[in-house]
View 1 (cartoon, rainbow, N blue to C red):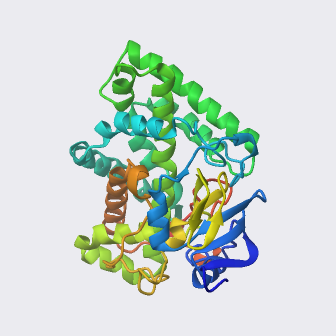
View 2: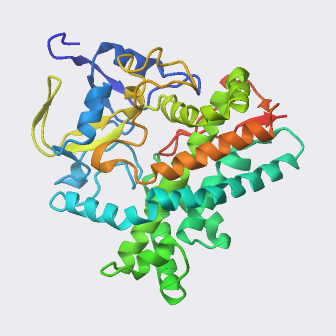
Amino acid sequence: MDVHTGVNKGSAAQLPFDRPHPLHTPPEQRRLLAQGPVHRVRTAVGHAAWLVTDHALVRALLDDARLGRAHPDPDNAARTGASALFGGPVGDPATEDADHARMRALLRPHFTPGRMRALRPRVARITAGLLDGLARRDPPADLVTALALPLPVTVICELLGVPGADRDRFGAWARAAADVTDRARSEQGLADLFGYGRELVERKRAEPGDDVLSRLAAAEGVSGDEAAMLAMSLLFAGYETTTAAIGLGALLLLDRPVHWRRLRESPDLTASAVEEVLRAPARGGGIPRYARTDLDIAGAHVRAGELVLLDTGAANHDPAVFTDPDRFDPARREGAHMSFGHGARYCIGAPLARIELQEALTALVSRFPGMRLAVPTEDLSLDRDVLVAGLTSLPVTW
């Protein structure tokens, strides 16, 4: 590392980082955090990029107008992976900011605090129903398929107005779209999702309901393609990240039973526990941005068009902000994690994700006070072939 600039000038680290244990910070990520704020890396497909790991820098750059998701030459831009959704540039550089502002303006009314508060009782009922089903099974059971996957899928589909009979198809398409290893599969999954969304828009225009997609389809100046794109983006974002968070959150509590008991005995800890669940998994790789102009990042001379990865997972483990950052502490109050981003691109669905996590974890520890892992934590694995690496399974017994 150049001690004068803070730039790690050693050999480029290779993404994704090896993760020997599902709950431990990847050793390479910890090494980079200790070496400086900015690093040269190679993405999963071998392209050069800058990786930013410092909390304050990541926070500032998430809201920096000199970085964007679009690229003037998308076919030749560096990519993070094969995913058609987030593997490379998105949008038109000339209209990116306006397009993003319009998207948020169309979606924000559907995610107001009042609407989210009104949705909480329904989330609680769905959770209770899923746990009723789990209780009727003979242990052990997989908590991913019993709760972590069906809860977010059911909630976002009900919110948008996706018929129950279509939800299995949606799940298969969304998983294909999220594939970071097979570009053709990802593109086909994305095309299937959009095609389905376009059909659903027409159905909603003919027979509207009390749901987000019906309101988008009826909004003045919103085309069928735009409504379908917005709805399918919400469907995708509303299930994959929350599914991963519920599974990892349950594992973090079960890995040390004292945490499980503590949350059951002190439900007032739920809100802080959820924030810690969102912070603690040290995800690697970063949020992709492309430099719109030449710029300097902590001494790194970034050229226009280069790929910059804002590693929120590393930032969430910055020891300058979080004491003993690798320790999971459900009562932690210090620091502000960036798992939902920051600034103009802060995740619009964050309130819904928090509600789902709060209801899921509270109901789990209350309904199954004696739940425990059915396999050692180190035997569990993360699905590394999709955008958000959640657990492939979480066998539990009670």
